[in-house]
Image (cartoon, rainbow, N blue to C red; front, side, top):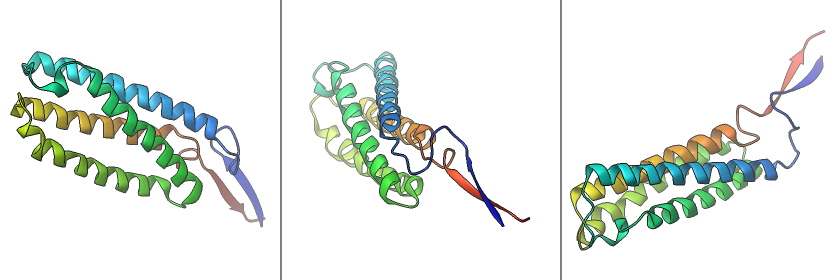
Length: 158
């Protein structure tokens, strides 16, 4: 039997794709921050933000609380790709758990903050979902070494 390695993307398996992973992480971070900024501004048009609600006084907290988790997710996914056999599956499970845990302060603490309203809390929850979808979607689809980009060995009988 003959074994042929079919590489579905540029590069070879085993080669460290950290620079490509970093670029995908940067694109993911920027995309998540931009989309959450759009949610912030769209939400402000739908729900009148209370000026006493410090979290929505401007878009900066939205950007900050999107950028840092995206960076952490990028590093985590890179490490999972390097050290585990099923990085996408593990990353998706961890991301789902983190998303659910991130709802806890929005549902327990945020309603007690001065100026908070149900509408503003809903916008915060939506921002968590937008960030999660973008981060998980982009990293697991575009990062080198994902299931779409792995080299597979095909055995041919002769």
